Length: 337
Ligand code: NDP
Image (cartoon, rainbow, N blue to C red; front, side, top):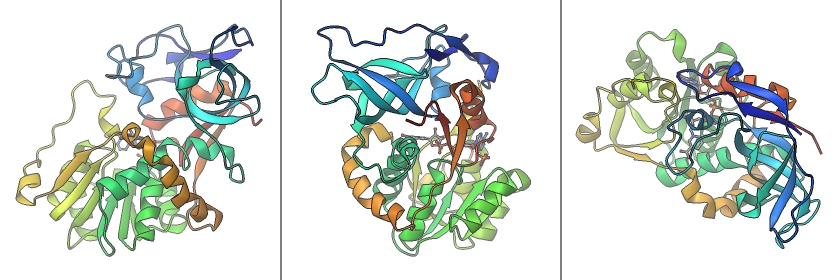
């Protein structure tokens, strides 16, 4: 049972060498009387929060990874054997699993049974999984968008951002995104239907850049990165603007967080800035699927994935999130069926 284990707690930017691929042992059998489920892992999701679990402090409520043990994350798996009445051999599921070929997990760790298989299975790590639901609830429930509003999205070509942009276009908004390379900017403009996009690494004056794209200001800023971007955005928000705070990836590897100096604009402009965690919205998953599946089938919403083949290539794929190596949703393929 090939596994990706954490070597030691991580400080600063994570490196590929912070993880090892090893041969572990697992009994391929559900113990008598337990309601565990034996899974064959197919697709693993690389998500920014995983860095937080690599540090000794971990994350409140989520704990941390244990050095010498496999790391864990969301994934799509096939049930090989089940001690739980809700699952049977051959079922496809998504939920928390370990980064290994086979996992024995408590049934409570499985989030959802996969019912629709006419779309790529890997989509359940992205557009039809946690990042998709994040984009949906963050934009529609926290952002409260209206037709014609001006929307700005950071990390716009990523797993969450590319969907927020498309949902905003479906709503009739004017949408601009920032991303870290020319390739990503081209994707946003030519494939994902954004009205405008720029490479934030090439803009020395973000405030001036935002004023160029939004001469009348921003109604909704979908926050994925924090730091300097947030500070410049605050200067450019409109009265009664909304900022769904999804993530702040630019801060995750810093021991000292960058100061945001323009926070008082929340007051002057009556901006609503609201943090949210997708786990609180899992009850909206079926409503979300009803919304997004027809759009995928009709080609009205597309999804860009970055596929790493093989568990042994997982560590490089995961740490690539923090340097922007991924183009679209980063997935690791362990097996295809
Ligand atoms: P992405 O697929 O967008 O991958 C991460 C991207 O972040 C990179 O490709 C890179 O893109 C960008 N990035 C990395 N470092 C920096 C930096 N220092 N400054 C600016 N951008 C950087 O990830 P996701 O779409 O999965 O996640 C996006 C955000 O949403 C993250 O902050 C994540 O933590 C958050 N999140 C929050 C959830 C919630 O429940 N609140 C749930 C899921 C995600 P680029 O090349 O453009 O810089």
